[in-house]
Image (cartoon, rainbow, N blue to C red; front, side, top):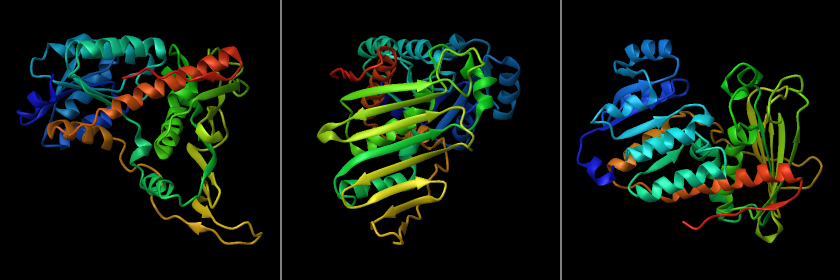
Length: 343
């Protein structure tokens, strides 16, 4: 549905798909006077029935049933990654805007299918929950990079420490088709690095192993590392540790010709001297997102105001191309070029 048509209505009517993190989105929708939660769907019908009572809305027995509501104009899709592609295609065919948990889809093959449908329904808008962009620390960091505070950046290291093995071993991730740690968690770090630099990598070399989870019958590795190659010999090494002995956390190190930035267990700080006992500058901005529903809420507000920027959609396409090239590098055991389509 065209965003201008939605703008004529007082509220955006939404169905939430998947009631894990989707329940938080549903609660946020209920609190916003401009949004209207009309239904929820989850394959666990008992959960859907129970939570629909708490949310005071309808629940659907099947995903396709959500489209039976004529007043529906948008979806929030919070289902497992391997369900995204088919659910997105159905949503686009029904001319509904959608906000989706990352990743948009799992590979380039799925992306081609989605883009084919979007070309037929050019007024459909979407955004993905790339939540690290909302963090005050990284907004500050982006402004400093733009102003050359760190000098010329030559290397970045980022690690996604999953620290929640039970979600892999007992949850849907261990059973999902095409799941990878880089798609599920590393995508946050890839997006953060590209967003901070306002650049796309040209090539990637990926490798990994399955040592922590070697006794389990998974098709993916529990450790992955991708080295991304940008212009001017800048490289970014991004790793995902699904089985690490550590709390859920992420690490970011940015090396520049003037200063170094480090965020780890000790907090964010700037190193500005090579001297042995030199002091460093503590950065006091919040380092984690306060509200994981803020991008969802802002997405629908931007549609109401006709201010949604379509380049956010392009960013998601680029991310899938980057991830797909990383998977191809795994298979070929060599550096590969990242192909970006023209949009």
